[in-house]
Image 1 (tube, one colour):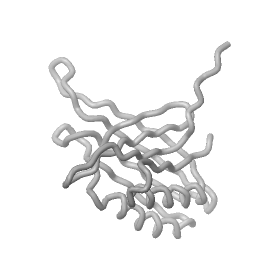
Image 2 (cartoon, rainbow, N blue to C red):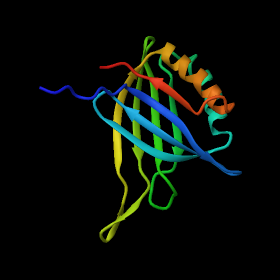
Image 3 (cartoon, rainbow, N blue to C red):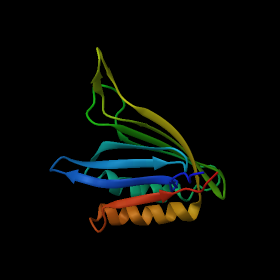
Length: 152
């Protein structure tokens, strides 16, 4: 019997590259059993804006919903796409539905992209930690931020 590799559940955003117009990030998602990763483009102020919006959302622990969007879905856009819906179903649990898509590529006679939908559960304190890590990412102090999830 062999042990399966352990995947830490959560969403990790890692800054890969930037120029005068955009920041490229790698978004890696794991539910503890499955994982998916894609590269997305984010506006220069996108991470700072996300911090502000998540700080507001954090106050809605009794039923708030917030959507994170990076990149755009579809073959007409460059790079991949990431959408996460955060929902405080109860005051102690944060339910997260993630839909992610890779960049499109030629596959025989058509253009295709890989896609994944993952479901995660986190907690308010883990969201607080993520917000603090995003602040450091936006300030250039670190190159990654992770929203940890719990095994379900």
